[in-house]
Image (spheres, one colour):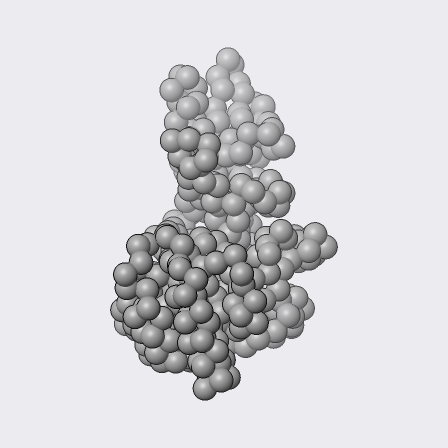
Length: 362
């Protein structure tokens, strides 16, 4: 069955570049029987989760009413055809002439009168300057600063017949999913891609307040989660410190300050996997101490990804990163630290089993 790597209609904040990492992350939650896309967005994460994990039930919280936009694609394609006919002689990213704007407004007016609906976000991506959105037809009607051509192709949007197949689609306040006892804590994975607290509200139905963000952090504390954010969010520094959390980072550099993009983060935690890691770390540490090794837990060092423990004895220093047998994976920062420590001629290893640890410190 086809897996979409991009949502059928425009939506700000799609995780289009995360497919491979998302797939790898899902493989680390083999015991989760329910996956909830809590903030929904375009439904892309829920769609991919359903295709990649057909064994699990996947709930998509259509937080932004994206499903209605999908159902209205035939109407939107009709509108796209009519507007594109007016813009065919105008260059991309150029200002639309006043007389053409008048005609566009009339087409929009007729469309709303005929269908009683307008996909404002999609239309905004055609004729508003990059990153700008209108939420109502009246805002298009009142606009006096002019429109800019953003529409590149006249091709109609394909009808996504299978995009929502197999999903349980609801539309609830996001807190409901954390409090509903029907979702078993150990066997539910929460996909979390919330709007940032400073979001203008035009591309999302609901913006997040500081209190919302704080509540979300609290609710995440005892659950399996996969959280998406970027370096512009202060929450990333709190989440990275959650015990047992793993993170994948995408660096978004640029040749100049103006071109620099925010680093993006995918941070996830599996409760059962972390418990296994804790058990392995505790057993290995007991074994080492019984043989005269000094053990130091490396936490709150300010260095993300530094190994879990340092073992010292007879002038030897061994750094160890513990991972769940068979499923634990190193984050980008963890790999960086292990490589750096080994380059400095320290011993730094990843340990999955007690046998490996015994061999390491013998």
